[in-house]
Length: 205
Image 1: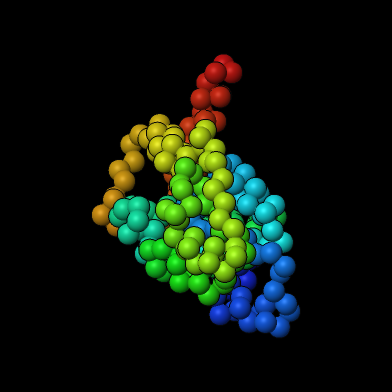
Image 2: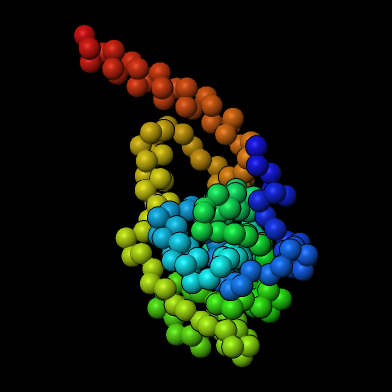
């Protein structure tokens, strides 16, 4: 099983790796929370990777996601989000950061290409001045309008209410999903499967 230490690379580890093995010819950098990975993310990251020889993704840690997105985010913990990103062919390194912006990370990594998704102007992108000042390039890639983490979360929330209408959710002790938490829902899943089998059996009569 993949562990956090083999998925996430600290800034110091990545710089040391480049020092010993050689820095890729053209380093591309982007960043985000990447909570509930969806095709909009994967297409964006694939397009970013084509702009250079290695793609480094700066990944907000859980506390910074909470400050940026609100008390009920992230949906997935940092190790889970990092493992999903690292599994993509387009992503070469996933580096977590705790600050609200990746400015310090960009300054240390010195990427050749800085990529952001959306309708930003280059002067609105954190780190753009530093990258351009070293002769680098800032690129803004269009987002996939059909995909949204919020829309995905709402779809799942409606589905959960439909599948388990009698379950009371305790929001006071909410925690993002982490490895090992699946066992807590084993009873709910078993009850759902029994209900589905009972409905199928009744329908066959």
